[in-house]
Image (cartoon, rainbow, N blue to C red; front, side):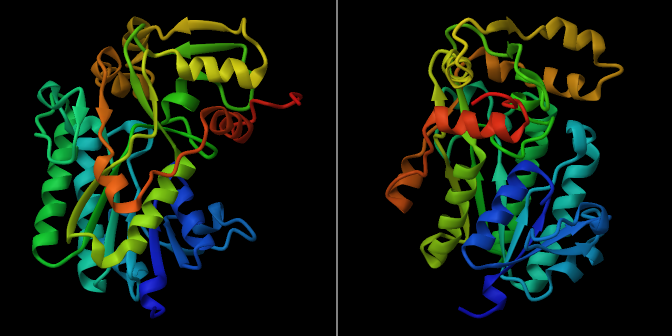
Length: 324
C-alpha cells in the first residue's frame, strides 16, 4: 500500500476516541498526524504522533495538515459539550474540504443523539433520524453533509456506539465526568440510569479496534457506510455499577442516583450540566444499537470483558491507587 494510503490525520487526538484511534492506527503501522492549536503543549515524547499546528475551524489549516493523507479521523467536538449549534458544522465543513482535496477517506464517530422515539429501542443503520434535541438535530445535519460528500466522491465511514468509557476518557464522558471522580479513590458511584432501564456502553479500545478493522476492509465498504456497535449492553442499568464494585472488591460501595434536578440548578454556572440535561431521555428508556451489519462485515465485534474494561478505565483515571 502506498505511503499516502497509510498516512492519517486525526482531529481530536487529545480526546478519548481520537486518542484511542490514533494509538491503534500507529500499532497497525500507519503514520499518524495530529492537529492541535498548540501542539507544543500537548506533544508527548514517544507518543509516535506527528503533531501539526492548526485549528479545526480554519479550513486552510486542516487542508494543509491533511496533504498526502489517505484517512482523516474527525473526532473533534466543542469542549464541555458547549456551542454545538455554533461550532460543530463549521468544523465538519473544514474536514470535508480537506478530505475532498486530499482524496482521503473520512472516519467519523457517530452518536445515538440522531434518533428519536420512533427509532427505538433496537436501532439499525437505516432507522429514521427524527431527534427531539438540539444535539440530535446537529448530528443529523452532520450526517446529511457527510452523505452528500460521499455522493460527490468522498468516502465516508461512520461508526456509531454507545456512551464511551475507557482509559483516556475526559470529563465529557458519563463514566469519568459524573459516575466517578478522576484522580480519586471511588467512594461513591453516581448512577445516571433509571432502575430497570437498559443502557449501552462502548469501551474505547474496542471502538478504536472496530474502526481500524473497518478502514482496513477498504473497498468492501460502500462509499457512504454507517456501522453500529453493540458494545456493553447493561440490560437493567445495574451491570456497570456491579462491575465497578467487583473491580474495587467493594460489594457494599455506595451508589447514589444522579441528581438530575440539581444539574438543572447548577446549569447556569456549569455548562456541562446544562448540556447533559438535554439528553436525559436517553437514560429514561432503553436505546440499543443493532450490530448485525458489523458482524457481517468483520465476523465478530471486538469485545473486551466488562470487568477487564472497567479495571483498565479506573486505573487510567487514577482511581485505583493503593488497590492491588
